Picture 1 (cartoon, one colour):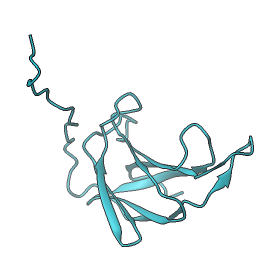
Picture 2: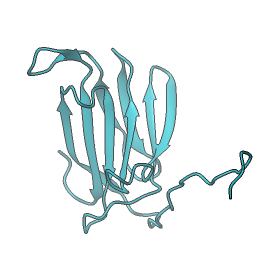
Picture 3: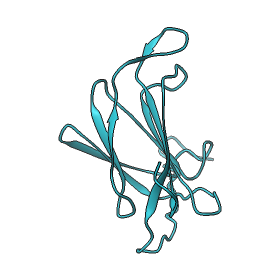
Picture 4: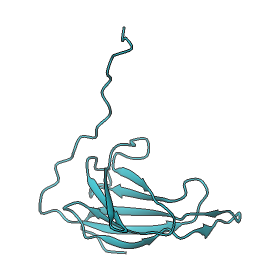
Length: 134
């Protein structure tokens, strides 16, 4: 039986092997003003067969700062999913490290939901190999 000092492993996504010459394109960008999950950048990375790709490193830049996060940490959404919580009144850029061009101009200015509540917007970005830019 595990004792109080037992260290349990944390869940780490297994990186997919994506060929170095693969370019991931932004195929969808949606901005929503919603109460259920406000103020987030949600990133989905899919293969051509629409299966999620875990282990993709994503960089978010804003106001001279940056943070890196990775797909696959919330498999209940998709193994190709990752999210980032924004602060108010900032402009963000999102890049799949080594795989995509930056998506710039994601602004976290407060918006009004259909019910009248003021929240930060959420952005949903979908990346796939090839494809058209939105």
